[in-house]
Length: 77
Image 1 (cartoon, rainbow, N blue to C red):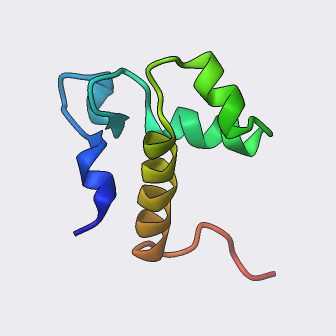
Image 2 (cartoon, rainbow, N blue to C red; image 1 turned 90 degrees about the vertical axis):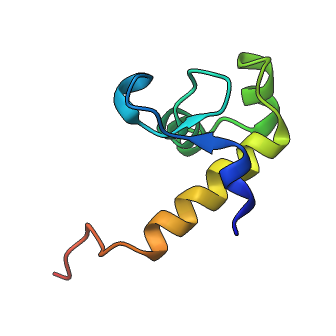
């Protein structure tokens, strides 16, 4: 069992069922986008005081698992 299940949940009543960090309204997507835009773990921990390093690792693990089970969105040219 993946450890991200301890940190990431979905609930149709919160953020329209998007994956969020348990006990917050922080979407997994938001954390991934901030990282993609160049935010460091330290930046994220400062911006979102309820966030922990474990949350960030859980987001990355979750994203890897989702991508590992999906077809690519990119096409071969």
